[in-house]
Image (cartoon, rainbow, N blue to C red):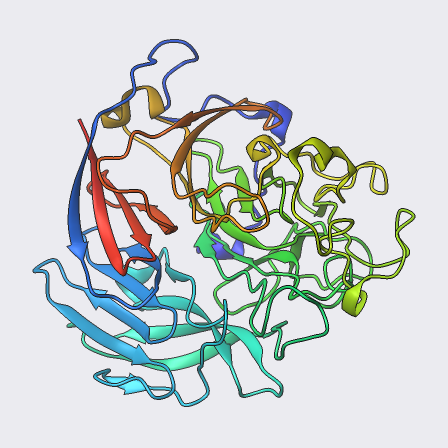
Amino acid sequence: MNRLLIAALPCALAACATPSGAPPAGSQTTAPTLSHAVVLTKLDSPWDMAFLPNGTMFFTEKCLGLSVRQPSGTVVKLLGMKDATGYASTASDLFCEGQAGMAGVAVDPGFASNRFIYVYSTSSLTAPGTNRVMRLKVNDNMTAVSDRTDIVADIQYKPRASDHPFGGPGAHNGGRIRFNPGDGFLYVTTGDTHNGEVPQHPTLIGGKVLRIDRDGKAAPGNGAPAGFDPRVYTYGHRNPQGITFRPGTNQAYTAENGPWHTDEVTALVPGGNAGWDPRPNRAGRGACPDNYCGYSPNQMGAVDPKQRSAFMPMTDTKTYANAMKPAWTNDGLSQGMFGATFLSGPQWKGWNGRMIVGFGGIGIHGTPVGNRLDVLDISRDGLTATRTTVNLPMPAVRFRSLVQGPDGNLYVANDEGTIARLTPS
């Protein structure tokens, strides 16, 4: 039976077993030594990657489109955005602006028989623009895609510069898509688009994590509250840019950008509220620019580390007592936490079974620059974590995506226009 038709909820946090392939606690603590090799260069804002078992790599460039690197090393441009050149086909409705554009890519678990892949992209088909999850069919020799089907067509997009002093069009756009290897469903992260109403809104699907089947229909057991769009798995998010699943338990975790403070990694539960509510007149807040209090109370000033406790929390447990509590909060800093994945395999030594997260912080308003990789040892209950910063074998850059390939190595995309391979030894 097709596992996409089966409701297979992730395990309850308290009941999760030790992840398969992860060493028992305390049995192995040695960190691997990493070597570095460039796989692709001279790219334009590479945003995400997805692999087939034979090493074929699909990848996106935010303002160009979808391409594939074949095992021979040959790169074929498959689907271009408006005005892109050199692609087998183009779509005039796809465009990039600010943080929005061609973002996440995922391979169908049944690719060997159905040839389906999925991308998240901004489209002009619905005014003033929306984000869409599109299903595409790849031909046998990996040179073209066809049969585009927009399985989700109503994800919010920020279409214009607003009266808010921070963030232009395309801001807080989300866009990571991943299949959970345990339940076979597609998880989609969406951003709040600088709209205070969106994260807690029951039917606007920005500021959410969606859990859907390959046709875009709600997965069974999502657990969204009454009156919510049934595709919603969790809500109350700001701008989750990473989603990954713990080996052995397949528990979903998000990596989420904080509001000038407190990037967060959080274990998700069905129907859970991540606790982000940037509306004015909530929790005693007054008016805010453009009715978005996403940076309150430090709307125009520098971030003062001594005052972080006064800032609006990303997970507001005072207003939402049952909000999902983060496992890790980046020492109260916001440094552009982007991609995330769990490392798996004995080659990773003491990092086997641990999460690795990437940062691309730009160091505005007193926040120090991120530009690093961290390995997180997350407790079994998903409520605490300890951090190890990776000793990089290459210069630090703004990381955008982290994916473990079928060869067991880690592939990283960055703002320097490069996709590189990190090999542990």
